[in-house]
Image 1: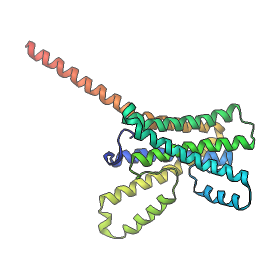
Image 2 (image 1 turned 180 degrees about the vertical axis):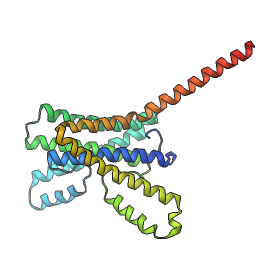
Image 3 (image 1 turned 135 degrees about the vertical axis):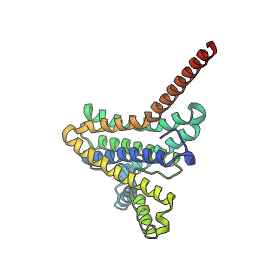
Length: 256
């Protein structure tokens, strides 16, 4: 899911990555709206808010919104820098997993701070919203980079437009036979429903467990980060097992 890059990725790889990351993004967005009354999975609206605050002369509020936008930007920037330059240092899989781990740590920081330190001040809220935007920047940069911009899971505006275009194209029978278009349609639907499902789960979980919902998001990110690690270990184990069996068989054959 994480160890392949760009055009080497299969449709199955993209669906797994898109589904799980969209699920986590939906969870983050809903929990941030519940706790902080702020959207954090994308920054489209914040550009309008930034312009509005400046037009009103609210310099502090404008600076805060600009700070949030920059945190999302730097999250995506750091994610791509790690992917581009980390391959030589740690290998492709590790360099792809590092942004997920950084995202996990950012969300874990928010959960721990809310549990043990939060005093419900405006400055604290602004900082924690920024941490979540940074985390979503990391995720969006990762998914877009390793999938050659096929997967973007933190916002659904462009995805909804792409779905509408595909549906209109499917009114022609020849397009319904086009595997590339059908695969893209399945991927976009997976991302859409996973995002919605993540938000639904997050909202329901918060009703019973409150701020511990952030830890649930971290658990999903652990699955994303270490899914391929388990697969690689499994493949290595099966390979070594077959080698041992083959070696034992050869010895037995030689003895006979």
